[in-house]
Length: 346
Image (cartoon, rainbow, N blue to C red):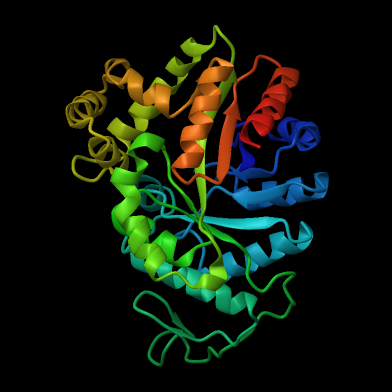
C-alpha cells in the first residue's frame, strides 16, 4: 500500500514544501496538490518537482472544465517532464458552485466530458495528430466554427511517458464505473471501507469488466486523517465542520453528490437534517449531527491497535494508496506519523 499526503493549498505552501524532504525520508510515496478557487496547482507542483527527488506528485484534482483537454494533456506532459516521470494526472468534475461561479463555464455532462478528456490526453501523449470527433469536443473545429484554419497537430515535444497515470475523483455510480473502466486510479471522498462494496461494488465491477488489461489493476486511493495515541480520539471532531460543509452545503437540494453518498451509506435522516440546517445557515447545528460512527470509520485517529484494524479494513476493501492527513502539533510529530503508518501499511 502506497502512502500519500495532501498538501495544504490555502497557505504556508513554501514552508510545507521545505518539509517534504523529511516526509520523503520517512517513506512518503506520493503528494497530492489540490486546486479549488485557490492558487493554481500546476505552478505549485512544478515547484515541488524541483525540490524533491523520489516523491511522486499528483494533482488532487485538476477540474476538467477550467482547461481545454489539450491543455490538460500538455500540462501533464510538462509536469511529467520536469519531475522525470513522477507525475500523476488527477482529474475531477469539481462542482457547479466553483465551475459556474468562479470559472463561468456551464457545468454540463461531467461523465461524457471526462471520458473524452481521457481519450484526448492519451492521444496527445502518444504524439498522434490530434483529431477528435466527440459529443463535447471536436478537434480541429469543424467548418462553420471559428476561422476554418484549424488543422490536426501533434505535440512538439516527446513526453517522458506515452501514458501518464490518470486518477479520476468520483463518487457517483456512473462516474465510478467510468473510473474503473478508463483510469489507472480512482479516488473517492469520505471512504468508509465496510460500506464501500455495497455502495460502489456494482459500479466497480461493471467498469472493470470493460477495462483494458494494459491499464493494470485499478489503484484505489482513499483519504483519511491520521493520529495515533491513546488520547487522540477527540481529534475526530475536527472532521465535523468539513463533513457538514460537504454533506450540507456543497450543492442545492437534490444536487449534492456528497449528501447522496451519506444517504447511500445509510444515513438518510442525518443527511436530510444536516442539509436543511446548513442551507438555513445553522452550520454548527449541522456539524453536530454528523454521525460519530461516520467520523470514526473514515479516519485513522485512535490507538495504534485501532489504526492497524482500520488499515486492515481499508486493504480488505481494495485500497492500494492511502492518502493521509497527519495531525500532529509539530513537524517532527507529523513525520513520525508518516513513518508509523508506512510501517503499519507495509
